[in-house]
Image 1 (tube, helix red, strand yellow):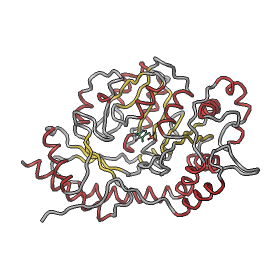
Image 2 (tube, protein in one colour; image 1 turned 180 degrees about the vertical axis):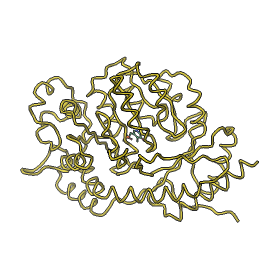
Image 3 (cartoon, protein in one colour; image 1 turned 90 degrees about the vertical axis):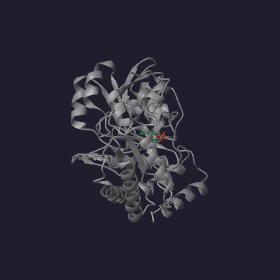
Image 4 (tube, protein in one colour; image 1 turned 45 degrees about the vertical axis):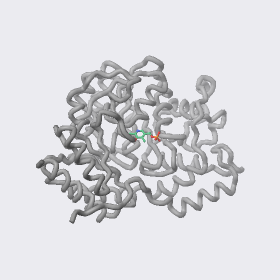
Length: 396
Ligand SMILES: *Cc1c(COP(=O)(O)O)cnc(C)c1O
């Protein structure tokens, strides 16, 4: 008899009780807007910004409405203009090229390697085409950040890091989001902290942060921030920067602050699940487990493997067979984008050249969510089912 998994791949854990209590207190106060604070009160949003900046060792932090908003704000704060070209990953999620398009700029796609990170040789080859790289640490895989910084420094490229999947991760001893001039994070439900929607933006550059604060819709209330530069930095910037409202509110910040205190614990729980599943998938003929570099401290909130050089119909067969046993796999290689899976050639508003070596990788990527509601036994069972079905189709 073949085993079946009955769990839910999109079920998050409940919001922790202390976060619920903090949220209820905000609701009772009626003061949900970030600048609506009682005398002497800092407000949940300003405190979240201060605490997140402290955690990653950033001079400044701004909480915003979404991760995608943080990315677009980063481009605006760097002065990216309509028609400018911005380097970015061919393998990422739609909000990344979307943020580039939202400022009228044009993405220049850089390929993906078999390690599922940006192809640094391709980056080097395209480095003269733009002054900004929007680097997406897609699905939590970090490239060799030292080599990436070398390439970007030698070509005067400013790096914006998309850390939607690397909040809590590190390259060597550096928090993800701190190697670029700006780091952007998402607190949307499927990321590492859950406020439904939300984003965080960090930098050490006072002028960039002053522009970001003004852009986010601070009116002239920037002195209420606890993780923003001195008001003197705003002297000209406050007249020169448009308000493109995208603030975070106290309710979301109240939910996030207790989760931030638990982040390390949650990351460790993700990694137990990741390692359990990865172990279960090893030594499956035809299936390539993604090797993780020793310099990388990852957060295994999802797992990918490759069915490299498999014909499309066989990959589809694996996806179908696993689904029949309750295991939801996402495939990045389908002709049509489905659900969250799209890739550079799905974004037809942005021109792209064919990238054969990236296409080969993309056609083989299988993606699995690992919500913390899965037990370790669930992860082992899911791996057994995948191993079983991959082996069966591979041998057929
Ligand atoms: C979720 C996500 C974003 C954007 O986050 P939102 O908060 O949903 O706007 C950006 N990049 C990647 C890779 C993501 O997965």
